[in-house]
Every structure is written in structure tokens, then in C-alpha cells.
Length: 253
Ligand SMILES: [Zn+2]
Image (tube, rainbow, N blue to C red; front, side, top):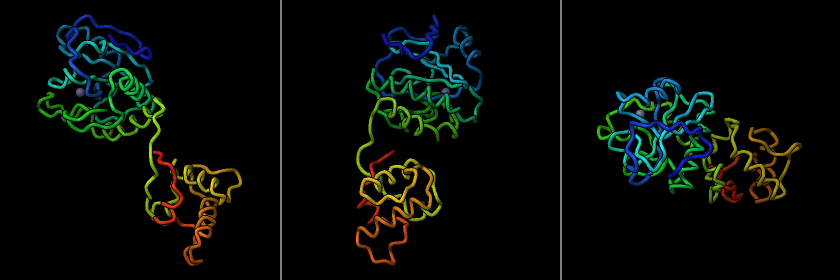
């Protein structure tokens, strides 16, 4: 028996297979093409022949309809080995940030309880956070569920789940490319770089490093280039690959 204490327990008496969950490869993301309350009623209707373990609302509600010991009926051939999370919204909608948080909580919980790896899955033979359409015909041929916008958000769900479980990314952040910095990006990568520049004594920051690339980042990096002994012509403050790699910026994603 496994219920997530972070979800409102909303058991449905029908439309699932008792003790039918054979294994858990991962969690499958769906879009309701409807509302949370409408879906809650529909799963109690014998005509539905459908259910899902979890469901989110656009304002951040989280329901659990089916205990994960039982098999919910959400993705046909994928039901025996995958859990499911339905999401309030119309086909083609992106998830709200609150829904991404709830999905991340479900994934983090499934990681702890069922050993689901914190990664995006792209086929029924994979593991992690998958989506309905990846199952093709065998999963009912729902090619529009949950839609391209939601599929593009799966990496963010995984990222937030990693934060929740305290899993730290390992290794160093790969060089994002010289052009990337010239776009003056706003990114956690810039913050991580800034912290390293401070640590190696090359800070030109007045208020500390932040996610927005600024003139202070460029000046700090220029100091790093000088410290590396690069020819003055190359000390322009724009990171190159060799200088970046030498800085050993911890991986942030
Ligand atoms: Zn679906």
C-alpha cells in the first residue's frame, strides 16, 4: 500500500485493478482535456473505464485517486508497469508552475517509494518521467496527450524533483559556448560561475554574483583570464572553453 501524504486522498471505488500494479518503471504525465473536478466525477462513473493514480489542478491542488499498489487505467498497455498523473487543462495547454511543482512532488515521492529514477523517459522500455504519447498504439494511440508544450516541461519537473530529494548534480558544468555569454543570459549557470570566480579570488562584484550576466561578471572573468596568464588580447572578459573548464564550475543541471 502506498499513498502520498502530500496529496488529498480521494479514493475511487471502481475503475482500477486491485493489487494490479506489477512494477513501477516511472510516472506517466497526461493532460485531462478537462477540469480536476470533472475528472474526479468521471473516475467514479462506471462508464469511464478510466482512472489515474494522481491528478493536479491548475491552482496547485493534488489528488490521489488510486493507491499505487493498485493499477490505474490511464495508458492501456502501460498500466501494469507505470504510474499516472493527470493534469487539469485543455489539450495543447502548458502546465502551470504550481502543476509542475505537484508533478515534481509525485516524482520525488515515486523515487523514494518505488525507486523511479529522476530522469525523463521517452519510450515504454525506459524509466523515469514519461508521457502518454510515448507509448504509441499500445498505450491507446493518444498522440496529443499531454501535448508538445507539456512534454517540453518534463525536464523542469525532473529538475524540481531533484531539488526536493536533495540529489545533487555531479561533475562540472559544460562550457555553454562563447555566443551564449554574449546574449547576456539570466541563468543559474551564471550564478554558479560567479561563485567560483569569488572562490578563486577573481571577484569584481559589488553585491555578489547573481543569475543575470552583467558587466561585473565580465570584469570578474577578465581577472580570471589574467590569473591564468592569458595574453592580454585574450583577456576580454568573454569566457572561452579552456578558461571555462579551468574554472571548474559545479554542474547545476
Ligand atoms: Zn493521457
